[in-house]
Image (cartoon, rainbow, N blue to C red; front, side):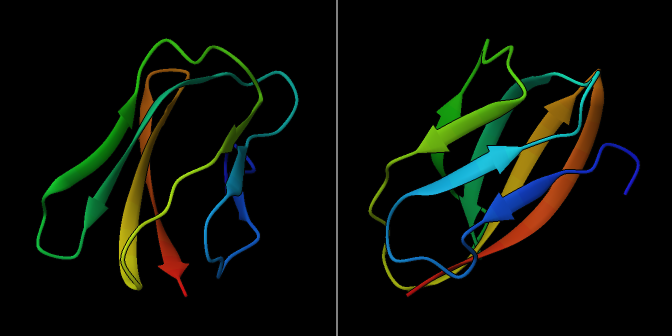
Length: 79
């Protein structure tokens, strides 16, 4: 993708890393459950890589990441 956005490991059972390519900056990210409810949000991240240590109920989540003013959606599987 345009910003080389990666979530790893994916699937995971707790912590994971959000990472974008060089010369890009993660501004913020949010995690939504499949019902559309916000379960985690972090603003003013301003880095290329961020480790997230979170325990969520098993299932599929949508991670919404803002990089350089662009919003990107990725699926995250929690085991």
